[in-house]
Image 1 (cartoon, rainbow, N blue to C red):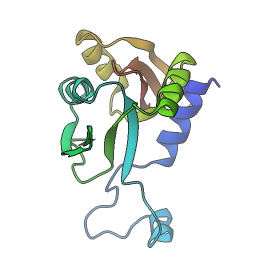
Image 2: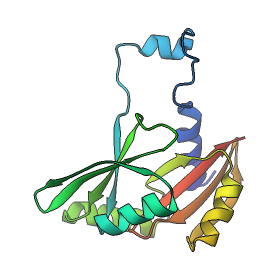
Image 3: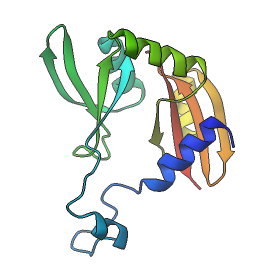
Length: 165
């Protein structure tokens, strides 16, 4: 399996849908064991321009701005999925740090996505995003139990979308 496919399998198979238990229902045995443990509340992607990234991630990908306030020269700028407004936030992190920029360029150059977003229908998202001018590096491709596609986010990153089949 290639590096791209491996990323999709790990992320998609280990992460279930947010709020997967019905209200009032008992949590799954896995979730019950994790009570009192940790959960992911924030993840970040390095971007070359926060304003450009905000426009792409909100207008094209349809994420919703959650937090936006100044922190020195930059902003604390987070987004959430409109499907889970209280869920994991995505921080649009400036790549101003030389180490961040080197990392971003290296993984982009190697064709490695920096993160994976879940999609209910990867083929439909591929069609929608292609019509919006998004450049795909990998069209919808079966990778084990998932369908993946990889695109450029216009901010220096490759992003993978995945659908569990």
